[in-house]
Amino acid sequence: MSEGTVAPDRRPRSLVVGLREAAALAPSLRRGLGITLLLAVSGSLGTLVVPLLLQRLLDVELLGTQGPDVAAAARLGLLAALIAVLAGFASWRAMYRLVRTAAHGLHELRMRVFDHLHAIPTLSVARERRGALVARVTADIEAVSQFIEWGGIGMLAGASQLGVVAVLMVVLDPVLGAVVLGIATVYAASLLAAQRVLARRYDRVRLRVATSLATAGEAISGLPTIRAYGIEERTARHVGDVLEEQFRTESRTRILGATLFSTSELFAALMTISVVGIGVSTADLTGVTAGRLAAFLLLVTLFVAPVQLLVEILDQAQSAAAGLRRVLDVLDTPRASEPEPDRSRSPSAGPLSVAVRDLTYAYPDGPNVLDAVSVDVPAGERVAIVGRTGSGKSTLVKVIARLQQPPPGTILLGGVPLEDIATTELRRRVAFVPQDPFLFDATLFDNVRYGDPEADDPRILDAFAALDLSDWLSALPDGPNTRTGERGDRLSAGERQLVALVRAWLVRPDLLILDEATSAVDPELDVRLRRAVERMTSGRTSLTVAHRLATAEAADRILVFADGRLVEDGAHHGLLAAGGTYARLHARWSVDATSV
Picture: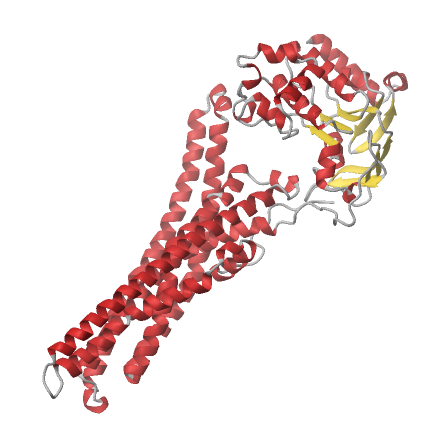
């Protein structure tokens, strides 16, 4: 079985399609959209009253056969001013509502993506660079936000204005209206062809941005290692090359966008010249008046302005579309399997038994790392799992903890198929302590409390006391309020493992899984860790991936893996006497331990 990665672009999405899908996922994006559209159209209609009034002002009130009518002209002016104020208010309300909707909707979408990242299989996340995933939640959504808040307003107002102006031009002068719309159709077709090229360019830009964030993030996180090996200059060159590639990609794309924008000036000039030339040359045949021609030219100006705006924001629209595609690709990634509520089952209370049935597992595009593994672990048994690096032992415990998705029916906990146990129930009954535990940049108490958010300070102190760690806790600079630093960098590897063990203790699990949890520690903490592990495993089922075989010696039973297969199963002394794989591993470990 294999698991997919965060989905690449599975199908091309236009901005409209992407926004429609985003609105379905984040309903706030479409809330009140009808009223917003109505306000935008009202604002555009109000703006277009001016050319109609201009025609009447010139042809009737000022140049009419009865002479100028100043009073009527003044009334028209006041009416135009009132309508302009109302139109301006309607446009402002449309902009306000759109900005507010975008802020709420994209916050909802960002949280939806963040939640989804925690629900997809861990392998899918592990195969993506962390900086690239961060970019999808931050930079990519920010590109969409900027477009909706600014470009979206322009498109909304511009599209409504274009439609109304087009109708007015045809009504005012069908011949000149046909000329304008013909030129606009040809120009629109050329823009559609160009935007396909621009869309591909912006897909590359968003990819370069994600790569830059990931590379810079790694360089910052790895500062101690970079300094330790004196590779600052090489790292700086690598980061510089990545940023330079992003700059070149963005520059080429921006130049193309700027080129498209400059064509709008040619479009405006061609349209104005055509209207004036055709209007004047056909005046005798069509009877066009000076007022009508002036009004029509003003309509042309009102038609050209949103076209120029739409061309200008086309560049921003493609950036938003590329970012939105990357965001939606995350949401396309299937979530980890979860049983239907009516199918979920809970194992009986108490220590959990573990049954593995003919388990074969492979990572994507790779060979089997577990091959036909079958084993039964009775409730309450303490089991050590040993083997060379790459033998499949860590994969086995991750599959049992459902951190990797196993094939259905191959794992049973307490007699219940693993896929039928709800995630909340599974995390309450099974605690997993990894080889390199993750600590948040918070106090030691806060890190431990992740095991049980409801745990108060006295209960956490009791947990340290239960694992005989009270004196270690009190010896820290600020005791339980000591900050652990980012990823626990202020603590040693062994101290991070102690915190992780206390965190797991709070869960009071019925199955405890330790993945090399006592490895890579300094000798001073070794005794503390082993004693804490002994207390934690007492009275509950435990599976311990053992790097140092001293841990295996204390186990009730040892499972020996080689090349993805379970090759030996028994107690320490019996396996030594058998002279097989375990005996050879133990002999080699004993020599290495003695030499140290």
